[in-house]
Image (cartoon, rainbow, N blue to C red; front, side, top):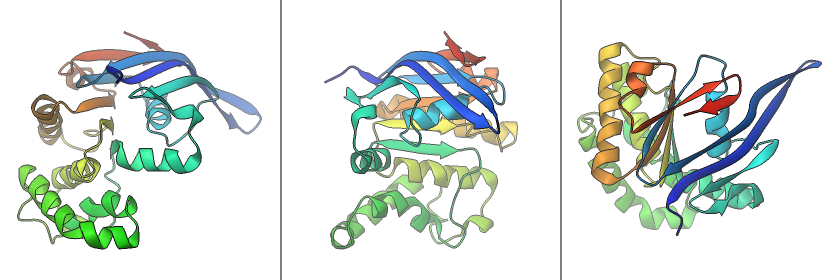
Length: 231
């Protein structure tokens, strides 16, 4: 089994802005060990989110290779990519992306439901609800299970997003500016939660941010500038 959770080599990504090509990534290479907490720092528009989308199987690189736990994701058929993205990678976003009509419990369970057939979900539902309740309790949301997002603070919404990302026990957690929509105090608490998951469970985390002070608390910091990554 590979000792690397992520191994990316020579990644290129270009988007078309009308007739003008926008070169977002220009040969990015990096690796992340299992259990490591790595922060990628860069200004807005530097390509941080694009890089996470490539690693998280949301998008595909124009050139280069990405291995997740030793698997070359560029060679996977779409169905396998979808299952890997849902079951083996967790995402935490800046703007939460919770479904407003669902409760805290229901939002948390979404990845488990997507990863199961209708018949399979019936058999797993009770266990998954128990698992979700324990996870939400750990995140300080035990009294919020039936609340909807509009009834929560920004910090609580982000904790629900973390629970949703963790419900399938993914090997890799990707966090895209998870504190960017929060005040500094609440953002610090969210980072503390991520750090605790990393230290207590060995969760591998790659977080992108523009905040160097927050990034300094990670095991290692990489800097993305002009489409290139520097350690």
